[in-house]
Image 1 (cartoon, rainbow, N blue to C red):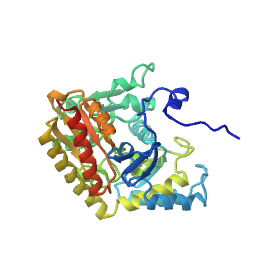
Image 2: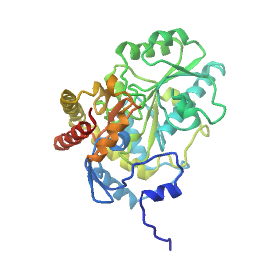
Image 3: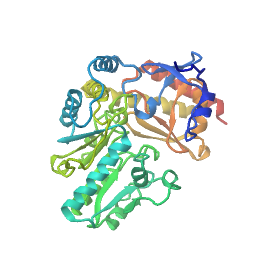
Image 4: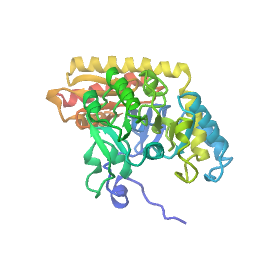
Length: 404
């Protein structure tokens, strides 16, 4: 029988690889937009597990789906398929441009599949010299060595030896630099249709349209990383649907499972044909448990009233943040769309996003940062108005304490 240990924050330092610096408190229970720690202290959750908990904590449709599937079948393998995976794939194609789906376990894996497909398609159709992948500075696409290299933040990719080649980073929202650089060697452009980790930066209409046109001109594929923006986060099921631009390949994860690990790559039949049998795979991808939960999440999130509710909640957040800023002017602007929002700090408060995060935690509010100068909010898409009001009251108290 396993020995029982008292589990507290000190145990993390004893047994966990030190690549994280978690908060001192350990959450043990969640319900809706509220979380409780080991001491029974309650928090309002404006972080959503970094844009993952799209229906809040322990939503009944997720709990019911998991319990039902847990008594059916847990795992098979890619030697055979399963009903939850097929139902989920069908649902995703019905709500997107895609014809075909590949299931993975995370956003990084979905992006890995997207990048491998783009390279394989280019090599098959145009030859091995068409291999360049263009992405954007401050972008984030995962932590595998390939995806972290494509991501435009060297702090995450340096220090691990030689990097995968033929990857170019350009400035986001700078169409002229992209037009100048792209060539027939470019096989794909990978981008977030709203940069998340990079500071909650929206694309201009001209930029997003121009990227699509340049990809068409140079026979390059357009890959949208919708790991953070997807599954209703921006008020459209996928962000591309609100931008008037359709990608060739789309990656999704985070809120796809509402907290259960799952990712997916979506694409067209023409492109999917290039991932022939044996060219790619995943032991756990398409796992029945994950797919059953994700099916319940997607079915709930795609309801028109839920998507409309995201846009309503965006207004509640913006109004509350502007009211706080009128009393304690720390923000220069509120960026983003839907419930992927960033409060960018003004000149006097540069570098202090984490100070606000920590002060909020002391007041019983969970928020995020996106870099050192942006406080990020990615709450449940169905968060109640009362929870928003209470969370904003706590945020105001936190800012008031450190305001000077």
